[in-house]
Image (cartoon, rainbow, N blue to C red; front, side, top):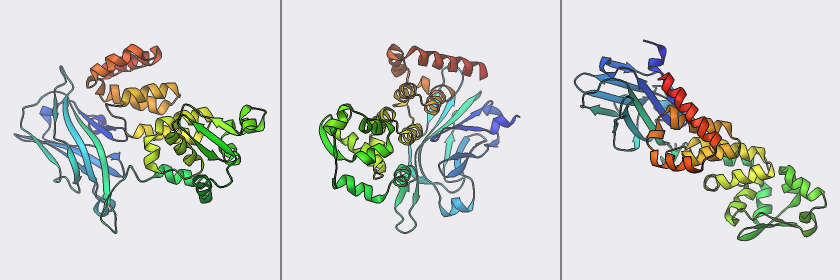
Length: 328
C-alpha cells in the first residue's frame, strides 16, 4: 500500500481522503492533516457496518483547547454517477477523541470512495468567560493594519481632525488627510505632487465605491479597520487596492478570499483571481472545482459561467479536468 493511501488533501477549510478499495478496509487511519489550529485524523472501521470518524490528534494543546467544530461530511463514490451519502450538518460539536464523532453507514459499499469534510467553523472556548470564539474571525487583518499606523490616526479620521481633502464616493463624502494618503499609496502621492485636478480642487472622486466601502478603505489606510467590515467589503477593497497600489491590502484580500471558498462563490472568486492576477486564489479555486470534484455539484452555475467567462480561464479549467482524469 503506497503512502498516498493515507494522505488527506486539504484547502484551508476542506479535507478529502481518497480510498481506492473500501471493501478491503477493516481499519485504516489517515495521516495527520492541518485544519485551523489542530492536526486531525480521519479513520474508517469496518465490520458489518462501516464507521467513519474524524478527530483531532491527541496533544496537550487539544486537551487544553479542544476544537468545537461545525462541518459537513460526505462519502462520495468516485466512479460512475458519483453517488453521495451526506451526514446531517454538524453544528458546534466539541471533539476531543475518536469516539466523539462516529458516522455509522450500513449501506454496502465497494470500489473507490472519497471522504469529504467541509469545515463551516472551528471555535474554542474563551479561558475566562467560556464564550465560544471562532478561530477564523479573530481579527488578524485588524492587527496587521494597526501595526502599520499609529493609533492616533484613527482619531484623526473619525473626528475629522484638520482634514485637508475630501473623498467623494458614489453616495457621500469623507474628509481625509493628504499626508496620510500619500504615505500609504504611491498613486495618491503622485496626485498630490503634480498639477492634477485633485491638487487644485482638494478633492478626490472615487465614484466606483459606496460611502461604506470607502470608509472601510480609509479605515484600513489609517490603521483602524475592524475585521467584520473588512470581510463585508473585501471585493471593493481589492479593487481599490489594485487601483491605488496598496500591495499590503491587496495581499490581505488575496489571503482572505482563499479562506472561505465554497460552491456559492468559487466561480466569482475564480473570475476575480483572473482579473486581478491572484495566482494563489486561482489555484485554490481550480483545486476546489477539479481536484475536489465540486464542479459536479454546481453544473448549472458552471454552464452559465461558461457563457461569459474569459476563454483563457475556460481553457485552464478544462486542462485541469483532463489532468485530473489522467491521474485518477
